[in-house]
Length: 586
Ligand code: UCC
Ligand code: FAD
Image 1: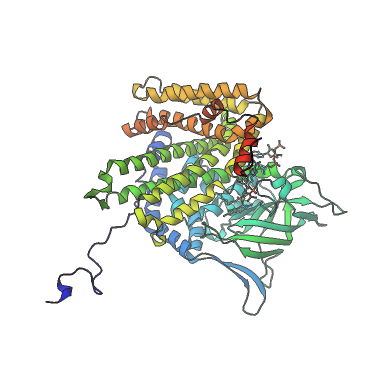
Image 2 (image 1 turned 45 degrees about the vertical axis):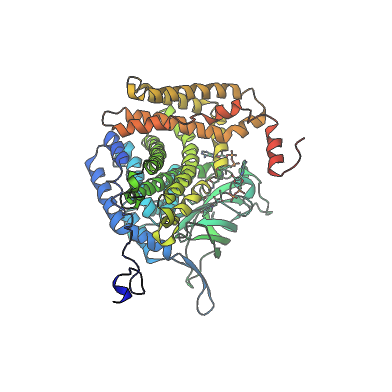
């Protein structure tokens, strides 16, 4: 006999077992909460059938393009073969397909056509939610494109930005434009007011030329950008700080020799993730531009863009969680360990169920903010809606950004070693999630934004928050199965209300130290109320109730818990500093 006849391993045979891969199915049909939410709020057949068809396209076609974007990352061709400077960012064919698809599918346009009134944003964001994990990060330029359209709309669609607005919001691929958002400079991305050195030199025709260095510019193959700069007076002086910043519009175009007008691409960033998308350092060397805001109102004017991009960020965060849960639960039906499928191991199911609860919470918070945005844009928002939108925008961005990293990381583990292997496509999910808490405002900076909006509204935003959260749980007060969850939210709200009242009497450092925990408390309590509200809807399932109960078992008000333990005392900063730098405590 020959050894090859009975030994399963030899050069010719590498064993007979091959693990089945996790299969991406239609992400719309696979998402019971998304479909339930839409059935409850937006029962429009064209929307549901569009989302279903798009979900099929994502699973069968677009996901492959997303993978191509990852394995064929952009590169910078600074010079042509004859030594001329060209600064050409070469992107993959798949990246270009994403641009055409985005226009055809109306991924920005839906928000501006408003065919479904106040629910148009929910429709648009549902589509982006299905698309995001397969988009090869094309959701990044789309976020900025949407943000730019929003800024233009709020400042007035007229020359010099009327054509741009039409290109940003079109469904025609050949006319579709994307926009950049160039805010960050070397000295500061959070502290834009101190960090911006770029100057705008007035021209005789009323336009400007920009000179400066933009340290992070994403999706730099854009057609236009919005950016910040300081106007120089005749003596070359500028006004420092936020009051000196104005908002500018610039087109990214080329001269007859093929050179970028007024821009040099210094280099592309070598990044942990988001590798599918070019992020460049740019020297602005006389970039022609037009001022869009009033002089000195740059930060306030770009705030509309920040609102939109932060909402997109949150959509992508919830979508990343949903995607990893969908793949993990599919895999659990295909992988066997210790004699049974993973799905039959209670501890594995507990792990996936915890991820599911986090994902549901994130989804409902994101969709509620989209609902509020839709109401504001269709002119039907109440004062309460407007306050809530302002408060919840930084809250949803900071909370879901962090949750996404945790859930996706846990998700990778559920594939065992394969979760760590590049060509499964899984590690990219984690790398891309990591950026969600950094760009568009870090967790701390957004926590301080929460404090800013509370202070500037003289507490009105918090009043709106308490009023609305109470009304959400009041609707479920007669549902006995939800009683423990209702009690938990009610109790956490009382703790939070008391803490907010006492905060006024505390030392100045108190609020700053409490900011992050406050933002987390606002998120957890509000999500608890949303889960309860959804579970009390007549079309809800028992799983909706179970998810609400599970969510509300955690500490919903960590800011009160930590305050009781003295975490925000005046001595804390000194103790923290001594701990971090290993210095003696005085
Ligand atoms: O990272 C970036 C792009 C990444 C790619 C896009 C991804 C999108 C998602 C894709 C998913 C896959 S672009 C860079 C983003 N940079 C930031 O987010 C900056 C973070 N820093 C902040 O947010 C700071 O808080 C600043 C820059 C806003 C602070 O500036 P100031 O000048 O110190 O702030 P002031 O003086 O407090 O505010 C100036 C004005 C005030 O209005 P008035 O004067 O009327 O009282 C504020 O109320 O701006 C107003 N304001 C706001 N209004 C400030 N922030 C806001 C806000 N969030 N909403 C409304
Ligand atoms: P810093 O401001 O130096 O922050 C460092 C740390 O200090 C952070 O942890 C922060 O939370 C903390 N911190 C800062 N201030 C405070 C405070 N007051 N209290 C407590 N903690 C504080 N920018 C653009 O303008 N356009 C783009 O297209 C763009 N694309 C990007 C793409 C990628 C992949 C990345 C990673 C970044 C991109 N950015 C872009 C930049 C991004 O917006 C900034 O990096 C971000 O806003 C943080 O700014 P910073 O890097 O200057 O960090």
